[in-house]
Length: 189
Image 1 (cartoon, one colour):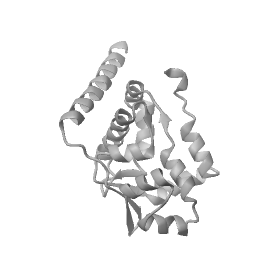
Image 2 (cartoon, one colour):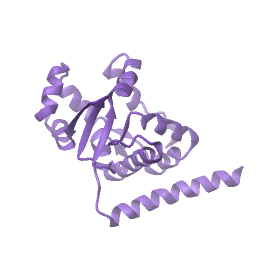
Image 3 (cartoon, one colour):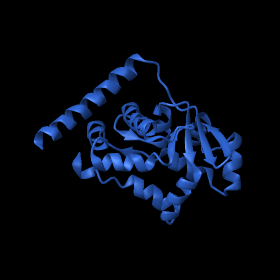
């Protein structure tokens, strides 16, 4: 058993180094759009519009219409986009390679994945790469914007029914933000 654990640690460390080196020498890929999908309905929001909202607290384009129709305060959404999770890079990389990490990523991969490719063999590595590259960019912290800017597909699809199911489990957006910002990893740094 110890041999397997050390092999997994070496593989996780090697993967993190490989991602670091490959991202340094290859052109950077980032999500340009977030596609909101429900059945036959699909509408895209440019990541640049989300970044603009995060910086200015002002929505533009389709995002402005969407927030108005959903009766959402742009300042609250900007706060959510800027919410930063403090995560150590190496520990996060290792945890994502554990069984628990894999289960969590696979659940997230049912909600977000590269456009029209919900297969876990593609979506799980894309999420891992987005997290690791985003943490490298933000030096120990990860926000939704840095994740999107590090996500290795041009369009990230968001499965709205799956997302709404997750949101229903939380009493409010504030509870959801609190859930994701109260890091259980604080004691492991």
